[in-house]
Image 1 (tube, helix red, strand yellow):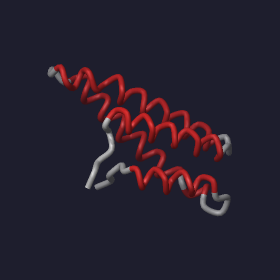
Image 2 (spheres, helix red, strand yellow):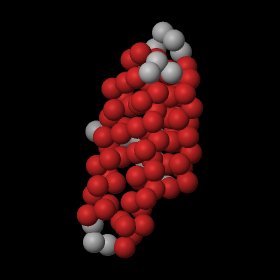
Image 3 (cartoon, rainbow, N blue to C red):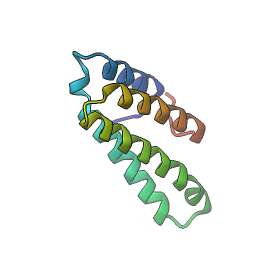
Length: 100
């Protein structure tokens, strides 16, 4: 099971800034995006009010990850790292991090 944590996002950001490791981060960005898109979709189809309130936050997080993946694909690893940091801040505001 893949769990999104603050520590994991900080690790990903640092690896994106390290030229020797940045190229290996695409699969992780894809997995993060997949998780957020599925959660956003589930929230949209859910009937409860709480899920409908969460949906815009999840959608925004997914959009930020999509932009990070696009930046990665263009070879702009610094921009991707910045967007991962932005995602982390959004997730923090939305209460999306899993705390263990």
